[in-house]
Image (cartoon, rainbow, N blue to C red):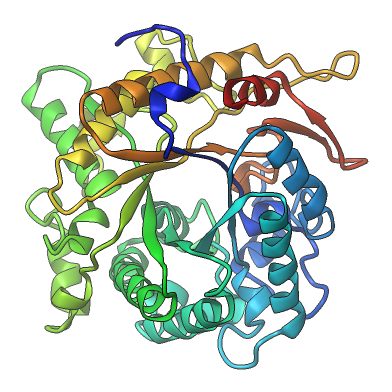
Length: 449
């Protein structure tokens, strides 16, 4: 991998530089101005679900401070602002009556972006399902395809004149696996009987959402985003190689392949046959496919897998970085692996149906400390430099990569992990909501100048 100094010009004039954030992790204002309850509101209010005992009732108070944060993003030199709509702020009951105060908030947010020269990039669904829909089965209920379509219709008719760039789902493998298989995330459901229908219904919604955006938004550029990790076998043993293959099918292939008309990776994940027999209707095969304008990749770390006989379904366990004597780790124990970023871009670029790739999330949590009013997050600066060099190399090798969005603008509520991990370019003092631009934010400011 080349390590020459980075320059903005290396990425071309049309490359989109942005920051990304999500509604639930930032907005707060969880029960005001007509907003309904989401699965994450319910989950984070349950005892012992959030590791630091916190919740996102206030989060970074983005609902009241969005203008301040948008101005910071502008001043750091970014041109794109990725945000998500809170489903329950738009439709408090999931379907039915529209909340005019929620609509007004997002108009103000979008208008503020445009006034400051930031292109709004909207994510339709970033994990915050209405609790009232979860009470009816949530992602396990096939009716969610209709519920989601109604939600998409409202958004795309209301904001078509102001937003050209749309992302349908944020990390479907994440919210189905963690929310409906392991129970680690909201809504906290467990087992294959929840996971399999949730996967199929999310994949149907992914394509249906794309069709609705394209129908209602005249100049739409529509994509969807995937969490992805380069997967390596621990050794050259047959068991390790095939363990890595199965985990790759689960984490990286499960949602991209049906969207490309390739079906589900049943050959490597035989348990998906049960999903196909039970939940897939004949017309679903063509309805799973949609011709996205771009695919958003969200990469943070690589995984090394070992084959074991006792693990159900996957017959695989991760060999943690510390067991491999890896010391370059983030606060969450994730391995810093810019080569993994390069490898996963190469992997997704092999699909003929992928027209363009954007990196729609990438970042790192470290234990940031304020000293004399400053945050010297040198590890994060090194992280961004290394990962951007990998992206530059992939572009040099001929892959069409259209942009990069740093995760995230400000520190925020990091789901199950609470407020401990800090991913932001901007430090947030949660007691006062004061913002302090970290050295990583200043690094981007200089780089993008």
